[in-house]
Length: 381
Ligand SMILES: Nc1ncnc2c1ncn2[C@@H]1O[C@H](COP(=O)(O)OP(=O)(O)OP(=O)(O)O)[C@@H](O)[C@H]1O
Image 1 (tube, rainbow, N blue to C red):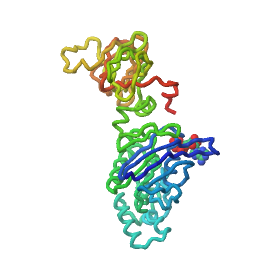
Image 2 (tube, protein in one colour):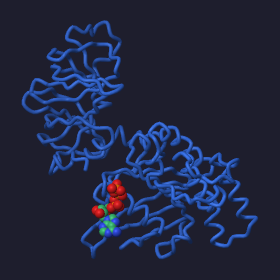
Image 3 (cartoon, rainbow, N blue to C red):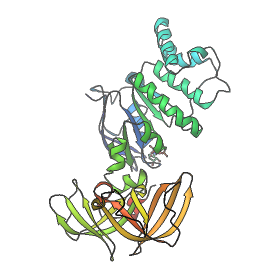
Image 4 (spheres, protein in one colour):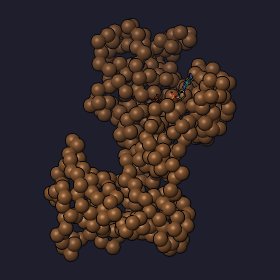
């Protein structure tokens, strides 16, 4: 039985004029560490607040451990919140950690047991008596997490918990947080704007847009098989090319031709059906495009060239961004593609140089229906 089950959750504001969350169905299992990603205003925080009971859904039901808690108070839901701004009081670490249990009148043996357990988990057991004034953000958030664990909650809800941390500390702390969650067998839902963080430590990622869930999958599946152009572009970026289906080899193989004399690719699509001559978008990640100099010796290479579609191109731009070398290449038909390689790349391709480019079509090329509004579909806002 899923730990958290959302059935058709809709939340509107301003007498229905703002639809913050729309018909969301979601199941999260016990022990899962789930991230919610999406552009600003897509409904992430509203969804978190609805699950925790801080706000009531307009429609729909929330089940925790099989029980309908839609009308129950936040306190009764065994959910703890971890905030971006820590909410730490100028009292001792111990008092911060056990504050809620004291207010709720738990007996002192239970409070001591819970407090000691929580501080040990976050590595603050030797600093319980200190007042955390002047502490670094990482340690302050440790207290915030200890407080959540101390409450005895089985579910952690975290709104940008690492958002105030220095990027280097955040990159280290994310693993610590994951270990804490897994070791304590907590179910955790976290909102972040940091895709890298979600991809690195999340079991699942939920991508939202305009109040709806577009896709919920493992990071690898989302990255390799986005179910829409928006999801693919939002997570990691996509090159897109407009084309049409010029051959169908049933049941699953479509040859698509890029318009105006561009190259032809054999694409596999198991999920979506296409028709002959249908306009489509084919998409490829910048890091999945091979580029070679014109005089490359294919015979000498061990690559299986049968699976790679090669086409001629010209280097339009070349620049370094930190650890990456970016090429913008132009196809014969004027289409352009972004290609990303490691900073130390074996070929020194120059601007203006004629080159060969290649795509491992079966593995790396995706085909999508041509959207009603391509510009809106690719807009990351
Ligand atoms: N109390 C409220 N009253 C009216 N509108 C609201 C309220 N809370 C949220 N909204 C609106 O609901 C939509 C979703 O907001 P929400 O804060 O959930 O998005 P978000 O994805 O968390 O955004 P961000 O990433 O910027 O924090 C937005 O259009 C927002 O303006």
